[in-house]
Image (tube, rainbow, N blue to C red; front, top):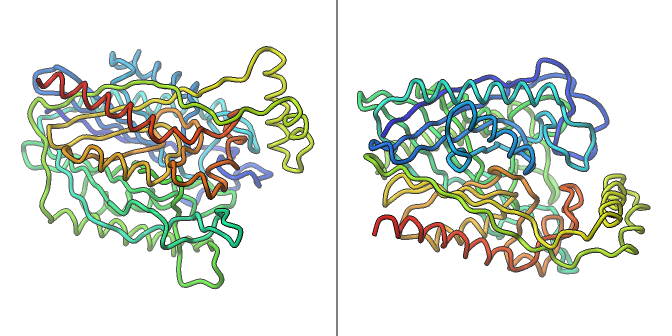
Length: 431
């Protein structure tokens, strides 16, 4: 296949509002590490299909922001929107680029800057494409811990739960030219980049991981976030049963250790993909909401002590004044098949780990790498088994994403069904 790689610095040049935490009250005060973006272009030997994966250090795209960005990229490259994948590392220390109910406002000039950088990277990747192959190595990592711990009342609270579900697959795609030169790598792991808070711009552990990998391999290294909705870094030893913020040196050290695990895994048996196997497809389906709030509930929310929930209540009431609240939210699934043995599955939203692991098992005939936080960052998408415990991811976070209600318990099953539809399409083509 043809493979092209390019990267860009996307660090803001001025103080900006940062996205990810509701407690911030001021613009960024510095930069602890630069933000990066990358482009990976893949084309089948026979020209039958092409795919472009964009990675970047920010929290993610709202569906409208995703649509605008992909349209700009499609116009600049001639690719179809279905052939373009927008992913984000989900750092909580990047500029606000989408409208959430959180502090600050969209950094309009930065969004223009980000778009120009992504377009440049995409065009360069397409222009420098070489014949090559893709190989996957998979190892296991102990970095990260499930963050949903049942309390004495049987409600999930945000504390380390070593017994909780977590996908420990540490996957890396290695892109190599026919000459033998390594063109780049893409690592996928499911752990929230929420190590640091504060008001400094930075990429969290994915940035330091990619920096070390790039230095050690001599080729650009990129990162995509797996299904990490209920997993976060856990820096030990520590007192108590909560999460502590690491120092910058501790964070860098943990990321380097993770990168070294990737490098060690490179010598393990690989799964390779070559030839004309590149094919990408997508579908958009509706994820239903649970019970929608009525006017009484929304009026009460307007007086909530949390200003962002109060803002949400007001916005939903305003929508009700013009028509009914929506019953479902559009959700996109993309499947990129590199060969009959290897494929990448991209999911919108903050998908919880058990969903990703279930999809891997369902698609076990083809080795599958699951990547969430892709295209539209619609909200948290919990697995069916998490609903009985409630908690932030299930029913305490939809307000911040501008959603009228949490997703219905059937969402996991609907995602499984629609993913199977996509997989069957590829099987039909092959037949």
